[in-house]
Length: 314
Image (tube, rainbow, N blue to C red; front, top):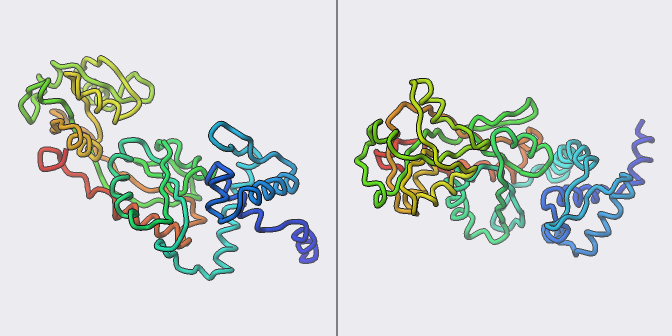
């Protein structure tokens, strides 16, 4: 058996798998070359050898870089964990030094979480010249698949859907906050239910039909007047600058929007659910020093436990 393995390994340069992983992560030959400290020509040549080795195109050109083929996605499920094991065996898990490392970490999260987390993350990494953070839009239903496809290093979502091979860590709890422009809607706070229902609302929803507020109102035999919907919380908050309407958004994001856009943030006049925001990653990287550093960074840079808006948090 060993003879067979040795024969097969002679056909492949395992360094090519490092290039493969970088291309998966960066989605660009140029960025992968920079991350690996290689020339673009050397990286392109390595990609050519990978294509021969696996008898597949592996990455196809797009306007923004390259995208993996189905064969590459399939390979990623096996290559990434294997590289982690090899790295651990060779380096004996050398400590990760963010002050000297050159690394891009890609996070998957929705725009409300980006508003709450990214400022703290950027501040924490502002004096780490080799560390780059990239954020990709993701939801609780997509983060696990994005992790498996090596599109992101870490997913962040409320109650993210995941499988046995994934690991998670609770980051903070949150709830919901009502936002409005006091110059356009001079309402008293905390809001009365009558005022909440009397004024138009902006809906934030993936399907544009209904949101959690509508579910809560329907359970009480009530409804609201929605004049527009958007898929992004930040988009709704920006509209409030010139629109006499209300928007009910996650508290962790409402705090940021209220401060930056000079909006009023108040507790909704009906009971809203609380939820836990968690980080999600593949179990194969749990002991990787760089990934452990990333997880600790996200945990310490994020907001504290959810607090209510009229008690000092928007």
